Length: 461
Image 1 (cartoon, rainbow, N blue to C red):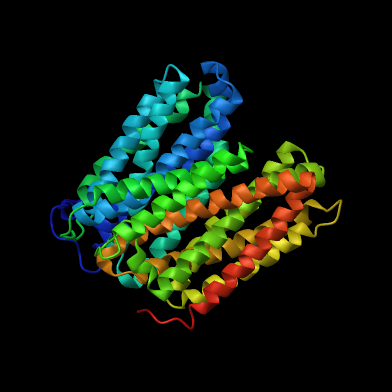
Image 2: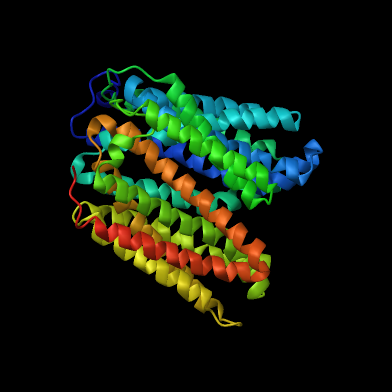
């Protein structure tokens, strides 16, 4: 590696890193992001094998996925806030180290409780990676190329999402399930070695970290995830209501506690900026569409259109594949055109694609399904990078950590809410719930399109 890109202790560049150092920094960032993004899909595929090997029932084994997701969502905002104080680079590398060590612990787990403990730690590490991922890009790329960098970021996530099941199936074909976690170790070590030498040192805030506020934020988001997930899995209504009410109460206490804080853990100061608030709401709507569709589509293809499991996997692929193609294109365009225009076009295409999927005839040709799925992927990919850039750019540089935390939180909250709404549709309408979910997804896209368009009238405060 060239010695001119080594000094990680020098002050952060005011407008991105030099080109050679930037390449290595991006390699470290995207390697870690790929690992964190792959892990949910990989664990989903391995659940039957894990349950059989550890002698656990399906209801208990599902916690291998749930505990990871809860740990990620609950700690995103606290870690993003901590990153503004100690530096985004430290949070990122610390998260990557914890994720790598926890992957080793997962591979060595001897029982379900030991695996769940390791997965919780792995989720905490993934949160460290995701919470400041976008904030680091703001210091790695110069302002004129930020949209391009964010587009590549979206492409990495979409590609990991597309290839996750295939990679997991390939590993399970040649080895036991612990290999799924062990494979993270060499990549994690390589990313840490590169990142420690090339990631920029970002400015640090002077205020102290509010630990009680961090605990309130973690409790609020963790209980929200438990409540929404419990509703999706038809747990007792009273328990779900208690969890959601407790989440709202903790959120209210958090907002009251940090009303005058210069950089609150839940960044209410940023939500006073119209562009930031509209970009966040638009993101939640769009990822709600994704959550609805990826729960409903397998049932829609198999139960309503009569396709096999193999065909269903093939038919779902065009969506994330086209997202991976469109994301860098939209990212480049976002360096020249307003997000209010680009993202609105993307959400309009996504809404039309969802509506067309819901209106498919009883026996459609495969090509009829594929071009509609590709249209959805085109719309989602065209939306994502410009919206993410708008969200990050509407926040001051000193609040990049809070904005980055909201980027990841909006994605996971939207996906979780969409999945829960899809489960509710199935509970109320049976097999017709799949079609209703697609229609609801089209409605979410329409609402998001309207909010995105409002950014053309908004003025940053």
